[in-house]
View 1: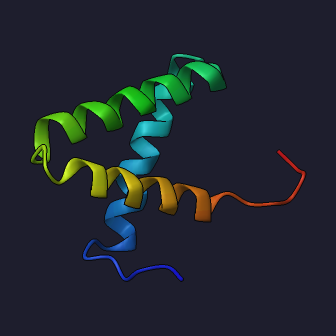
View 2: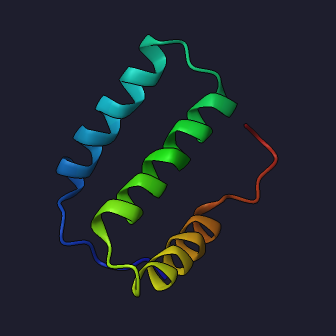
Length: 75
């Protein structure tokens, strides 16, 4: 079940659109996009989350990512 966010849909969509635009502007292939986003997540966790809390945050992130993946075959 999705959790309520403290951020507005508009704020999330605006920033997400900006990130997608950067990747599209650079014609970034999917594998490189995923690598860059993964590096960004790692950097955010390592620089913004207390070491003792990192495993819990990582597990929560993994669970949320897994739950958001669609099972349909289209891509």
